[in-house]
Each structure stands twice: as structure tokens, then as C-alpha cells.
Length: 255
Ligand code: 13P
Image 1 (cartoon, protein in one colour):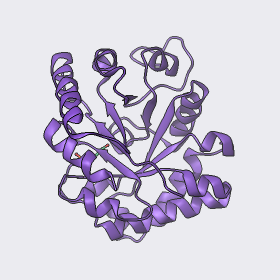
Image 2 (cartoon, protein in one colour; image 1 turned 180 degrees about the vertical axis):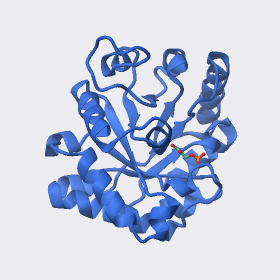
Image 3 (cartoon, rainbow, N blue to C red; image 1 turned 45 degrees about the horizontal axis):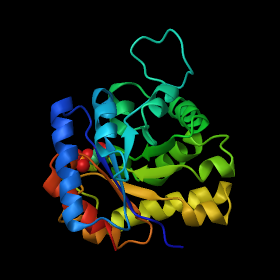
């Protein structure tokens, strides 16, 4: 099955509203010149810039993702943002379980599972992040970790619900380090993720689920990563902050 490539810009805690709008305007201009058929493009600005960016790219088939949400529907949860609020402002996707949230904010697999469920309830597509640390890789625990994260994060999800999830493999040791996984290393784990999904879900999910790679993706390495059969796109941090390099990655994502 041919899976449509998807390239996601995760800006993390970067860009004010004017900076985000400048980027969105430049991106639209650049894509008009170069064309962008055949790839889904998603921007994940910080919460504060989501609405402005949505209004700016509306009609250009660039989709919006939030970088997180909270799993409760509403209520006394100071500082949190709900799924309903995100769909309200036009988000289509939401990143869930990013390793930085796991590392700095105590996010657990159980919390990730609740967030995925809440996102789906509001028709948001979760971009569900998983990945091993360097230590886990060196101890030979990569596959065990990945299996645990996948099974706990998706616990109780029906086949229908799973068909709306996008997976993202981000080895923690490759994030922001300039140390990209080799295409072979990424493919080995991403093929494994697909195989683990096959155990709980049918052939259709196995064939159709999109698995992104994230971790020091650049215009230089995107081409070789995208040649791998189980790499369906990229979740890009640092190189998504400049329009030039992001557009080059989008181009590299089309094959
Ligand atoms: P870098 O591309 O900066 O390594 O970040 C990857 C990432 O965490 C995307 O979510």
C-alpha cells in the first residue's frame, strides 16, 4: 500500500505570533513556487500562535497540530488545554507523548493513553511519539521499551480508532543532538513498530498506519530516510524553524 508522506514541523517552545506569521507567509509563498503535491504538511506552533497560524494558512491545505493536550474534558486544571479547545481553533492533529514531555514533565504511558483517547473523541489525529534513550539502546532494551510504549499508549484502542493514529519514532538520543539514526537503524525499529501493531490490529492498520521518524532530520538526510519502506514521513524540530530548510525537507519527503 502507498502511504501518503507527512512532514510535521514541531516548533517546540519557539516563535512569537509575529515570528510564526512570518514563517507561515514565507512558507505559503515558497510552496506556491515549488509546488507541494503528494505530501501532507503540518505545523505545530506553540499554543499561543495556533489560531493566528491557522487563520494565515487556511485554504492552503497546511494542517495544524498542537504540541500537547490534557485528557480531561474541562474543569479546574489551571494551565491546561483541552481537546475541545484545540478542535475549536482548527487543529487537526495533536502531538502526544513527546520525549521532552516524558522527560521534563513526568508524562507516563498511562497519561499518554488517556490523552490519545481524549484526542480521538474530539476527532483530533494523535501523533503518538515513542522512542528509547541512549542507555536503553546500549543495554539492548530498545525493542522491549518500544513494545511497552506502544502497548500501554494504545491500550484499549479499537481497530477503527487506531486507523486514525499517526505513529512517530523518535529515538531520544537523536533529538536535538545532530546524531540522526541511520536509515537502517530507524527502519529496524519502525518495521518492528508495524509488526507489534499487527499483533493487536488487522492487516489494514498494519498496512495503512503512517510511522514518522524524528530526531535531527535535515534536508541532507531526509532523502535516504524516506527510501526506507516503513518511514512515511518526518517529525522535524530544529530544521523546521527556518522556511528554507523545512521546504527542502518537504521536497525530500516526496518520493
Ligand atoms: P530535532 O529535529 O531538533 O532533533 O527534534 C526532533 C523532535 O523532537 C521533533 O519532535
